[in-house]
Length: 317
Ligand code: ADE
Image 1 (tube, rainbow, N blue to C red):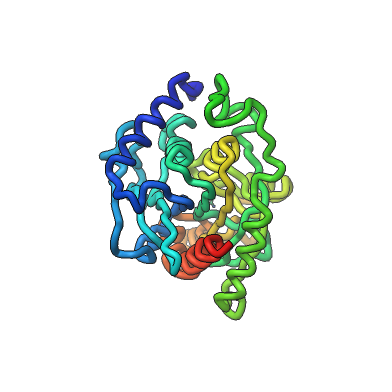
Image 2 (tube, rainbow, N blue to C red):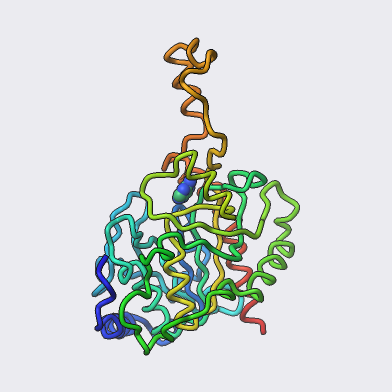
């Protein structure tokens, strides 16, 4: 990882000017930015048809290019809800595991700040570590474990960019309590509490990926206090908070982490298994990318309705 280049602010400013030049007056100052995680890009369909501007990431100067299947990259500007709140949607994001620097992973966040965004809603697909969570549940994040950051792989490493924020920003209040209260109110208002899917509050552990966790790593993360685990979000949250942007974050639980230790090869019952039985046994609970995308599709509508309601309510006061 390279340290943040000294002209990171200049690059973000240049891109902000470019983006503004592509937007009609009504869309030039988005109040809320929403980062859409894997399979959660459907929010695009909930904004007004006009005016709407879609900028493919590949056309935006300085923007990182997405390399993952299922993570198409589009920066979409439009109006949402009865009050026609101007918003920016980031459909697809740059992940650290793709090889991007932390500066690039968080580039869109800083760009949003320069465009005038006050509140950022970040969504992701994550593995459930908390035993009470089911696939399809939604977790409103109230804290995180930045495992990479604790050892120095951190988006704010390098000379501090004073234009954005202070050298040593606090993160004890990173996950805005007012926004979390609004979330649970919106959830009830929409009647989502009457359905099978539940909403929780929990702690997100950021891991580098791209491999999913081993069983031992899942148990370690659970012991450390994590409720969900994923490969994104935390760098964006930190950079947003550094720049004074309010943050709300949601994980969609797309798979359950395997918390039991597995079996030993010298166990009699395992010794007696056929190859087919062994395969079936080993595949139980194994995380895969398709499963992550499928769970996203089913739960996405509720998540979208929730985000839309929160944004609409925000505008009221
Ligand atoms: N994204 C979705 N599921 C995940 C998992 N189990 N670990 C990390 N990232 C994930």
